[in-house]
Length: 99
Image 1 (spheres, rainbow, N blue to C red):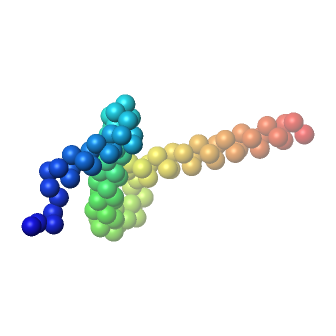
Image 2: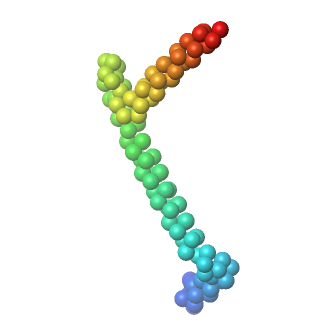
Image 3: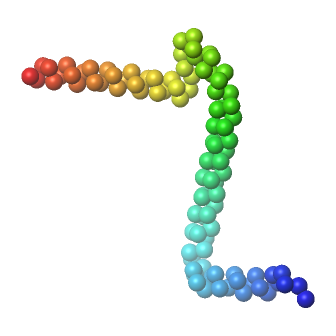
């Protein structure tokens, strides 16, 4: 006799799950599990992409050493830093005028 799951084991398991959670909650639970799996897959894909980018990072540093404009996220960070500096200057000027 096999110790594996028999088809009737699965039927009993499904009936217990339906009784515990109710038939109305099961589709919502399945939907949320599906969304979680999509998010998980996207995050792991992003992590793999970051690993590949970090492997080519020395090449990027050599290119940016010659003061070439940074690309992508680095450009956004540079733009945000510049905007922050401008806002600080404006705030300092407005405080001087208020004094």
